[in-house]
Length: 256
Length: 273
Image (cartoon, each protein chain N blue to C red):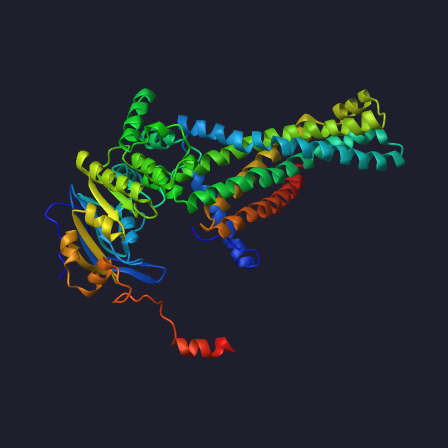
């Protein structure tokens, strides 16, 4: 496996890198195997990637909801439409902000950890050791982390959305005095389960795949040195943010 | 001509050439490792010792030649056949390569859980037997980070012999060990070889340790095999490079200094201005 691209190497190298990442994903999927050991390892990874990301997701979700409500309440109040704040908040969260921000936060918290872990496993010959024990490292190390990302991100998106709505409640209902029935009623009447919530959840599954895929790819291809692992973790965050935002635009255009 | 043949070879490399990164590491290299013995493969740093190990484990393929382990042509193996072959191979990597997120017990149990359908109670007994053999049964529930480097290597040795392989390969097993750990490692390698009737291949450049352990030695240098024999035979060799290597002389065919321009021109020339 060749070394990861260094930012600034040019478009051809970036294209090659995309090709390598694509082939890597195909290879991982083609070698997937589902055994009792794999299931146990996947659950362990869901705990590491998902449960341990809860603090940052809950904290950021709450403050995003708080700030979004503050800004939109102020703007909408000028047009006498302050009651529509919860509609704006919920649609923004369910359709865009929830999946996108959660995926980027996941990349920063769990993605970097996955990249560094796999990179260090290569540097300390743990991947070689697996290979020499006739245990496929793609199957044993990469597959559980990839599946864990696909499962953990949608769950985290749900939690992010709930805490962001709570942030909105704190500002709109408790601080600005909006009737709580109006706040929740507007959400109920304006959010469509399939079109808004469902599309957002579909996005979150895709973003989970992207975040986990890039994390394992950069870890797998990291140069087995301190500098190489540091570079790979940085690339995980940058690449995930760019790819998620790009794919979000494409999906939003297709889903409208 | 160096005698590279063994009467009952467990491993054979025949006319092997390996090129890595545009550099020829081994050229028309032949070697036969006798079955049931402890064989040391020695040589100066960068001579290609680890390449020999990576050929035997099929981590790399030769550009030319054949690698045989028993009757199996290793260099052509792939997929499931390679997996089956590797289950019969125990490899101790230089730093142990234990999984840091698993306890010592789980590290040793890993190959048993992956490759056998044994019930957990039996796996537990087998793991404890292996840990007892390396003297670390008491550390079963500890994590590798809680143990010293020498202990980690002993756990890794227990893991390597978990499936009772026919061939054990040790990559630099003595590097960085204190005298006590060194003595323990020497004893363990010998015991595993004799009690389990395995063939042991030790990749090393520790001459004194090899003299205490190995039944047979090979010395590699300059892309080929330069000497073969018992440690005593090699110690008495009049081959210039073998003598330099066995006695650790700084001057000889292997230069101490990396090739560089004349020191006077380097000190007083362009760089000094």
